[in-house]
Amino acid sequence: MHRSARKMSRSASIFQFLMFFATIIAQTQWSNVCGMYCENLTASVDRPHSASITDFGAVGDGITLNTKAFQNAIFYLSSFANKGGAQLFVPAGRWLTGSFSLISHLTLSLDKDAVILGSQDSSDWPVINPLPSYGRGRELPGKRHRSLIFGSNLTDVIITGANGTIDGQGAVWWDWFHNHTLNYTRPPLVELMYSTRVVISNLTFTNSPFWNIHPVYCNCFCPMNSQVLVQHLTILAPISSPNTDGIDPDSSANVCIEDCYVRNGDDIVVIKSGWDQYGISFAHPSSNISIRNITGQTRSSAGIAFGSEMSGGISDVRAEGIRIVNSVHGIRIKTAPGRGGYVKNVYVADVSMDNVSIAIRITGNYGEHPDDNYDRNALPIISNITIKDVVGTNVGVAGMLQGIQGDAFSNICLSNVSLGVRSTTGPWNCSLVEGYSSSVSPEICEQLRTSPGPGQVCYDGNSYPTAAVQPQAPQKSSASRLLNPFRKLASL
Image (cartoon, rainbow, N blue to C red):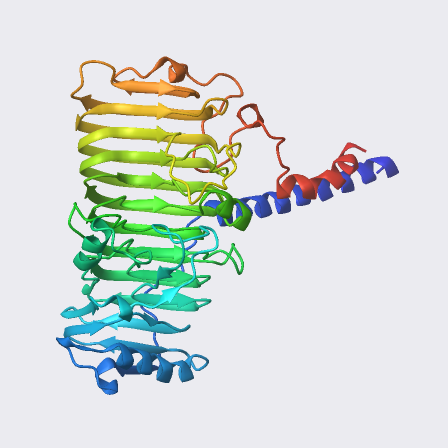
């Protein structure tokens, strides 16, 4: 064979190998970015050491305060953290307690007839510093009460049971809120900060004083490994209870929420990432979030929501199998001037609604701010939002999609949406939005009436849209970066 021919053959073989290698890397990278990060998480972890809360003097009569028993039990079990971990079992009974903190490599397991009761004395819920991405308590300036079950800087933590119950006894807190007699922001039921490999499953949460499940900053050690799995939960609170959000991943990555029923007084599942200048400065986004098979109802809020605290950014969210009844909103994005940040690369599909006032709402004037020092020129980016395969009956208004002057929300894509709307005039209200639609009934507003043309791609939940609908310069993939040095070789 001629020398140049052999060289070309060898170059082609090298290039083919590199193409194969780089393609595998690119596919693996995308699988890591958009896949289910929680597939290897489970509540069924064999802990070699175990103890019952009764071993530490706890009394399950619903009257005796057992905070010290929980604290002592967890302190004792911490000695097994590097020996395979431990389980703390809560048997049948009504176990009154104040706030307590978990440790790494621990399973908190509840019997099916166990009820952990939150104390109704606010002094049993310690006061701690505000979240740095909020700059203050969410409700009041200053500090906030710690959650009933708390943890920080943990790994390998499981809260589970045979559908046992954690009851925050929140009515007293709701009264303080309504009477304006709170001294600090109310506490969630569960808050885990800066933690990874977290599982919360097979439990009922009731009557939270504030938000229910709040994983926050669970992306700070290594975003590719910060895993949170929330599954098989029932979350209940009166629909009149204030701010009793169901599940609130906040500045967290690689979160899976699935197979839950929520009936409460605020958003069922809502993704957050910090508030105005504090969230912008803290700069910890929420990303790579999977939401599947959620059913619920809420009096005042939405089934699936984003924001309004989204200043650190929210991206790469896939929600499917959503069932919303007797609620104000089905799907909602909330933001405002001063938020900054972004909500982008969001895919919501397979949604059914019944008796919902507004099926789809994007709000650009949700204007609550932590203080007067926010940057009024910090405008949010809302882009690459796909909503498809939606069916609604007894819907008040199909959609209200309202951007911000000088900051039009872009690439909003709706397809295969069929809504039985009660309103005979103006089923859609759109302003300062751009996008595309296909097979939407009733007929959508003019701003979204066109179908995508050549080079105009709606976000499909699996890959980024093309540069034609991405105003920023496209980033090279791992495969492209690997192949660049060899393209000349292949052309020789």
